Image 1 (tube, rainbow, N blue to C red):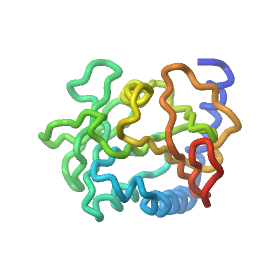
Image 2: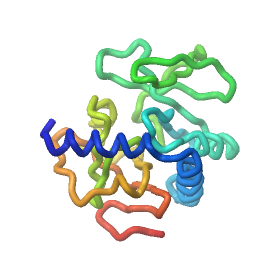
Image 3: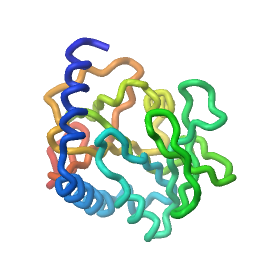
Length: 199
C-alpha cells in the first residue's frame, strides 16, 4: 500500500467513525431510498449486503427494505473458506449470528452458502471512491478476490458501493486486481461510473 493511500484510508475511516448517530441514520435512510428506486434493485432477487463495522454506512435499513420486498439477503461468510476467500450465507431476521474477525457478523443458520456468481446485486462497503468506479476498501482485498471473475466476464452480479459523500475523492489509482463498482450511492445521490451524479 502506498503512503498516500494509507493516509487517505486512516483519515476517512476516522471521519466515518466520528459521524453522529443522527447523521448516520439520515445518511442510511437517504441511501436506502435511492437504492430501492434503482432498476438493479428492482430486478434483483438475491442481494449481498455487508454488516456495518468501523463507521461504515449503516446497511440495516437496506436489509429491512429488501426483506420487506421478499428479496433474499446474503451476508459475507468465511466459514469453511480458504484464507482470503469469501462466500455468502442467507440472512434471516432473528436467526443466530456470530461475530468473526474484524467484528463482522455471520449467520450461523445451517444453510448452504452461496457462491458469489449466483448473486444478482452486491452492496459493497468502501473507504473512498472516485467517479470511475474505483474504490478503496479496508485493505484486506476480500471483495476484489471474491469478484475477480467480473474483470474477465460481463456476467452478474452488479457491484454497487454505498458510503458518505465525503468519501468521494478526485482519483484512486486502480491496481490490476481491483474490481470496480458500477455505481456508488451516498446521501447526496447516485454516482454512476463514468457519468454525472444522479441526484
